[in-house]
Image (cartoon, rainbow, N blue to C red):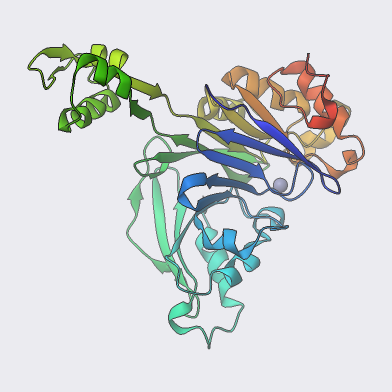
Amino acid sequence: MLPAALWVERDSCGPVPVARIGSASATLVNGVFGDPLLRLELIHRRRSLLFDLGDPGRMSARVAHQVSDLFFSHTHADHIGGFLWFLRSRIGDFPPCRLYGPRGLAGQIAGMVGGILWDRVGERAPRFEIREWHGDHIQCFRVVAGEGAAQRLDDLPLTEGLLWRESGFLVRAAELDHEGTAVLAFAWESALQLKVRRERLDELGLKHGRWLQVLKEAVIDGRLGDIIATPDGKEHRVADLRDSLLLVDPGHKLVYATDFADTAENRKRVVLLAQGAHSLFCEAPFMLQHSDQARRTGHLTTRACAEIANAAGVKHLLPFHFSRRYIKHAADVYREIHALSPQTVLPGFMAGESA
Ligand SMILES: [Zn+2]
């Protein structure tokens, strides 16, 4: 029923992973060797979420206009370097963009915004609402170009890592350690989708009405034992009506995790966050022959990446953030990961190796 994760390739930059998940599409814009930047497009909503913002590559200003939320794992240059491009693209009549990241983000954003002369923009100034992760709460700030330092807003509670929730999806995070630097990994979870099977309604001679909304809400809330009356006056259990009348799309999880050391605690947190995910985008910078360097720099090896995906039971593993030393040998990196985790999605040029 689900469209599988797909691959497209880009000649000069190597493989560019793309995952289609229901009505969302996630693209690793700079491929597996370039700066981290995952664009999650909500296809029918003209809206995108970004996870990290390295080199913006070929992204058009139109994409920047449609970004509602931007999630930074941390603010090393390869993860935030594209922010000046983004800032410039947001001059105009746009709602504030929400930015999320580890503590210190607000000051860093205010610093980048403050490096520019904003005397001509007036009402068209870019605006940001910044939400910093502080373990047990979220600190909120507002930054408006031309208005100076970040302005502190009221804190928000932080429970179960929940950063954002709206009717169609939510985003959670987990804090990881990257050789002393705090890093966030993110999970985007789309909501359960329910569709009424019209042909079943017709067969049973039932009319559309408010009762179907009541039924859907009961299913979403998990009240399967509740009793609901259909328009013909009969009473049914919610679970029975669900089975006979509704098509249930269970919702999907996509996880983005990069720049963290291979420690027991990090593994535990990522596995928990990614449990049962449809797609896991996970860093795999170093092959096994370079494990020393992985350890020194607080990054994963191919093996750690594969083992995390296996432990989390993900459907598709999309490894990325490969060291550029492998740029001519991408297939070797993939082979090493795939040998340990058959869920690894291989690029098109390796077709035939997935058996
Ligand atoms: Zn990085």
